[in-house]
Image (cartoon, rainbow, N blue to C red; front, top):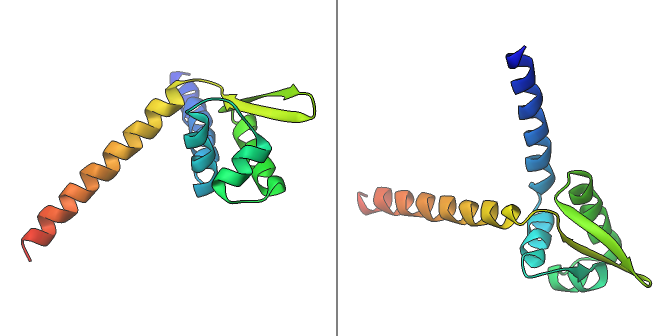
Length: 109
């Protein structure tokens, strides 16, 4: 039974990671680290159209990564849980680690 629960948990985590697996969605998450933003501001900052950004935000919302609220005619998005920013910092560390390894290999050429 625990094996089934573990598999289900892994599928759920995979869904969240897949939702982040887009350069635009990662850029949106990075922006939201600094605080809530409306779709119009997010679109300008990531250099994409509002409808495109809205579709990406819908994926992030469905995965539970962001929250939304109405403010008049604007829809404001924020990170649902602050630990998403920690995860992004972890990704930065993985990139630094990979770069160091690559430099070590290149030094031996």
